[in-house]
Image 1 (cartoon, one colour):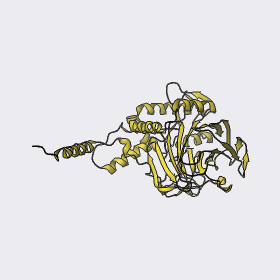
Image 2 (spheres, one colour):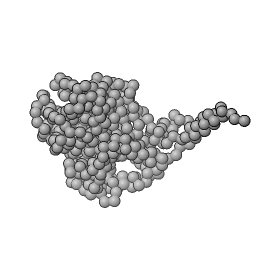
Image 3 (cartoon, one colour):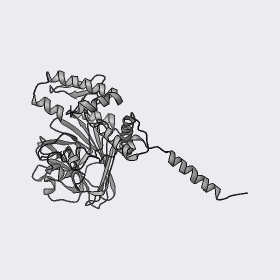
Image 4 (cartoon, one colour):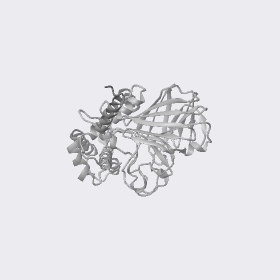
Length: 398
């Protein structure tokens, strides 16, 4: 006897079993927004990979400028509804200080239309908080005033931006220091139709676009001028225009080196020699899942797993990989060195973490822990001693 109702019932049953048996990956429990607001605003929902040099994230306004003590010292505060751009180098969990500019370095600001010159003095964009999304290795938000979707992901040395413009005016990008309080001026020049190169202090960068730049102008700190090169310009920036109105994607790859522009080029060619944003995003998520999977948590309490894996995720922000893909890194003696067979880490935030975080490393990521210990040896040898040298303290605690 045929039972026509039986087949759909069986299909639904099989699907229910498959969904019930599906187990979330450790990376799925990470909530990058935890500890990003108010007195607990010591972290930021950056797009990054474990111990990555690049931590690509918006700097919020006004929190990154007006926060005092332990508030928003990562440059991001969840309660803010405006941003100052998307910058690449940050200091999360770096301790409380007085009111100061806490934005990151090397900031990218997407926009369209023709803003007033005052926009470039302090570029501020409204964000739609209801669209803000962050996962391990990925961040996105909608900019309603110019109708732009901003998406970010990263490799160790590179920040990958995807901007979807939906307006009728030409698409533009403004690139500036970001943190103007601690910056030493920006140097930048156009290399070809799709590339820029430059530096901010001892941070060297290469920026590549997936489409040619139609027009370049400069911001010299007080007005817009013609040209395609800046040289250590305080409060300066470069404006790139793409004659591509309508719904269009603009991809931007920004790579950092602490050694040289040549090293930055090599880092980009090795880590991201393509324009597949989703591939980079997937690789970033996989890198986080691999490291978080070293510890398995059992039980059915979802919130407890979110707390645990997010805390474990936060332990893998600092210290950062300061080694170029060829092994070169800058030492405390202000010379370039080569890490042979290991990765050199720096940007430590010691305080009491030597009691907890580093013993934890020895248990769940012993290979990275070994490289960190070797890096501490490097710091000792290159600094000559552990005396009260101001430079040593700043570099160790940055």
